[in-house]
Image (cartoon, rainbow, N blue to C red; front, top):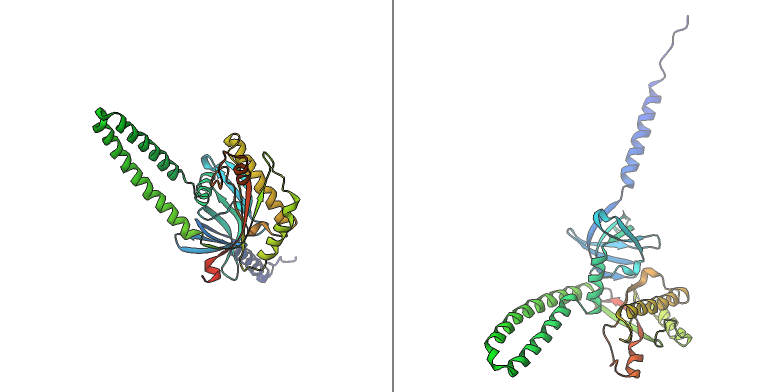
Amino acid sequence: MKTRTNPPKRVSIAIILAAFAFLTGTATAQGAQVQGVINARSGSTMTVQSDSGNVTVLLSDNTQVEDVSGLFHARKKQMGVTALVPGLAVQVKGTYNSQNQLVADAVKFNGKSLQTATDIQAGVTPVEQQAQQQQQQITQQQAQIQQQQAQLQQEQKVQEEHAEEIAANKAAVAAVNKRFGELGDYNIWDEVTVYFGNGKVTVDPQYDSKLLALCQKAKTVTGYVIQVQGYASKVGSAALNQKLSQERAQNVIDILEQKGGIPLTNVLAPGAMGTSQQVASDATTEGQAENRRVVVRVLQNKGIAGT
């Protein structure tokens, strides 16, 4: 009768080694996660200030950018890399390359943080708006004091209370502006302004040559980013003007990308600026025409330029 023999032990050892190699490879492939605030954009890279210091993040066309909000981040909205502006609080997931850069697979942020960062770039923060409103109230109260001497003591008390609020708000505005000054310190290499008809969002072909020339110049600048900001006059509702400024900015971005060969990773844009930063009076037809515009700038971080 034949006796059964056990299989060679070397087969079991080989299986163990293969399993170990698989587990090791899996651990190596695991990615990294960083949370912090964007403090610079240069071309397809951005710097995120985290608790452990600055992290260089590399963006690509495959990077997934999401606006997450709601309880447990249940609501998600796919965004473009143009939304990644200085001052935005983000969570970055990816893997480190040999240059110790975090190659981003996904970047997530909250819509409220994006609005705050956009307001900072526009130079119109909610805090600043509140301070302006309170200043108007004080002016009105001072006029009432002159007209009603009998109420002088009460009005002075109200004025002092508002003065304290304004001082606190001014300090908050100064802190916000200082923060943005540290985050986005750029040289302007070139600039083109595109004007639009009333209620129009289509780019007039006459601007194609200027925009393409700007694209060619941008490509000669190391680590360039292009900022595109759309504006509207105050004719019509605020919602309509916000929509017009967004569509105007997007149509210009399309020309930069499709005709000028500019990758979206090099576009830095809050995009829709609405009726903020008016350059002329909307009381005249000429002033309204100047305010219906898109401003395109080629920027370079001063840290790269060495200035």
